[in-house]
Length: 281
Image (cartoon, rainbow, N blue to C red; front, side, top):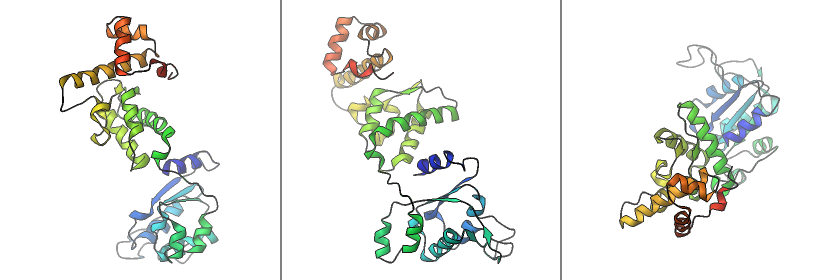
């Protein structure tokens, strides 16, 4: 959700202005008004100085209200006023302050059901629901998994001064097979961990968290015949060689130090299709 909100902001006329994210579910009810709208000095105990709220900080830019369905009825009334009047007052103040912000709101709740139950204001819902985007869970967007993974590999390689260049095919298979209950945030954390523990330029299956690993996919069989473990290692080495050579069997065989005939037998044994790597580059 936040990635989509970022994309909307940075591809708009407001790109040069602030992007302010608010996790509505994390704001205590006693502080939510102060966090959103700011407060004047002496407005309450502990208010030792004037403080700008999120709407004031976002002026001219975008404010992203994540989990807006968690707001209490009292906060919903105040938010409605900002959307309608384009103004607010700091806590303890009496002078209306104008604001010019794009509001992007997100929730994983059924707001229409909450309206029926009296838990969410209907007028606020219609104010927010000017243009809606339905974002399916990551497990329903398989095509995005690899694109996001590559983006996070590049991001965290630079951030941690690592030289990780790519993700191995077995690791890709594991990423694609997982159900991602934590969506993009879980994927990002997973890739960050893999980048940190990788000791070469490739993220392998065994670099991924245990929740993603299976004995077959990671090549880390902890029980069973020795031959099964050796077969898993051999399969991954052959797959990686074919990927590096763009599916060229002869080149892959030379890299692995075996004859083309033996390479063909091993590929057939492990059910590896060399043609799948010819369009990877």
